Length: 252
Image (cartoon, rainbow, N blue to C red; front, side, top):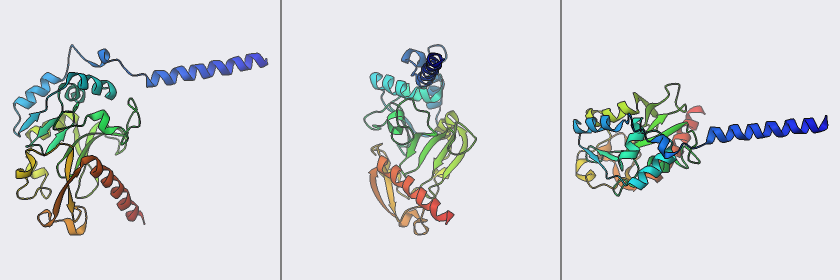
């Protein structure tokens, strides 16, 4: 009986290990590259008819394959298509930076950018996924449960509130929003009068930090704020810390 009991324990442990491995198993690149119905031709049509200025960054094939594999998303999806076919997309002279597989001007890719922020290891399932940001220090993310029940919808971490605000749109709709909507209306209060003179050659890995902070009572008028370029990575981490601090004060 003792030997039978031990055998059952070993069997259950082996089964558990196998299930865990299966859950975390990474799909191969061949499985992720959809050859019959990829989303990229549709995205190309959107780019060709875009109302706003759209600049697709050059793609490096090796980097694209690595990023797609690390992200574990199919090219059947719009997100997978953007990762695999672009080094990123700059919209409205580079004001919005949609992440792809990385390029000279936009030297970040989706999985790498999220590692240490929303995931710890490639293949992890995030609560939200950072997919784009802007020159004013705002961040766009796909909701996977962190922000509510509207899964796969885009949220915007607004620099003038530090709240994750719902856009009521999925990733594909968000891309169309960037390409075709009136961005000046969306960014009202977040663009200073001469913003367009500073953006065309802006490094896609840097964003503007403002003093006073735009989310503070003193920072409501952006024309009276001073601007400084900082690494986007530093600004994101700073905003998340400040967001938690502000949330804690509200609960007091």
